[in-house]
Length: 360
Image: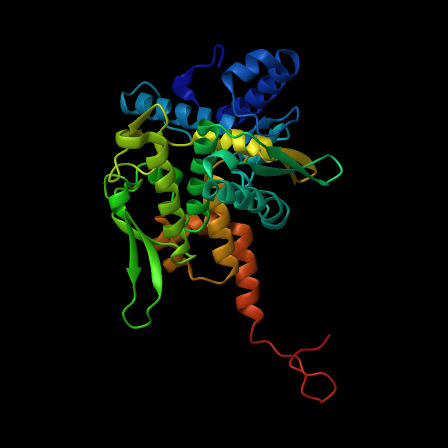
């Protein structure tokens, strides 16, 4: 603020500072990108503009500073800024529904992930000496490429089997990856409905495991298939670790120490890199947006698909452990489609019988 007397700090000074700060950061990004990247590591937009969150965080810190200064009588008033950071010409804003990686259902999940998962599943069921699997990716022309992995070692098989069980469980339940990494075998149950005879996979999220510190039961969409998949993975773990493996302990463990849980972050990253879907480009308002697919992308995919199936927000929020408002905020694209279909599903237009409801 240079020589400015902060005692008379006004809203106009706020607005002028934010404009100056955005121009200043853009100049640093152009002239000294190494300095900029060391301070702001989240490079969502591959342009000369700066991310909205960079200024938003500084704004929140300055607001707190002014609030404390006003409480101590160091400034006359606590001014508020009237400028919208998103409206600044040098600021790029990424909507909430584009901020995290969400797998494209047809192009990425069905064509690349699922075929690779099926191949890994077959390898797990094969004899130890005959194990091999195929990973699927795409070249620059969009053609599918098969990468066959032969002579699979124990470590390689365990790593890919962990990814197989971990990601498909999230894709069929919407459970958070950090919650699933701390789930134990005693939390998984195969429940049979006595009235229908149908069997369901239930995962109990304990209070100490839940992100929001609330107990909930997660019902897997593929019924008993998730349970069968996890039991198949458990047999491989017992074969891999022997007596060191605790059959009642954590499901997903560290290969060096089966007594501690593992979040699978690096295995999922390497798996996505092999498939060519780790870092993907999305278009937003004419700019290239790069997002990273992680295990959370499968939770996003699960919620998106359930919204497209018109599952009500309350039921979905209880299942995935978040609020309806957060679902509406982060998955706005899917919500809009749901609203359109719900609004027009009973609309009938009679043509040529003189009973038109509306006119063209």
